[in-house]
Length: 48
Image (cartoon, rainbow, N blue to C red; front, top):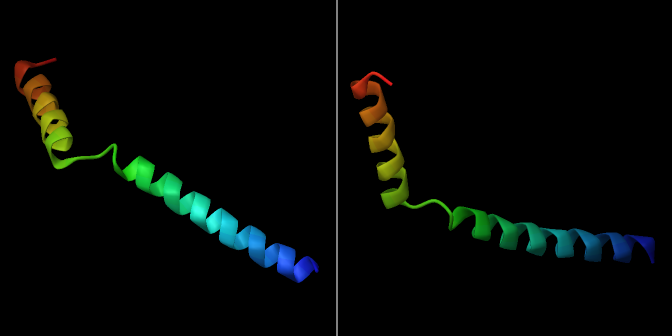
């Protein structure tokens, strides 16, 4: 019974971690990254 419980827990954790990973990945877009890079370049070139 403990092996079965362990397998179920591992599969459940995998699904949960996969879902959380997808949610985290949605926070990053090429547009947002480009905007942040441009902000850094602007700060560097303005001397701040």
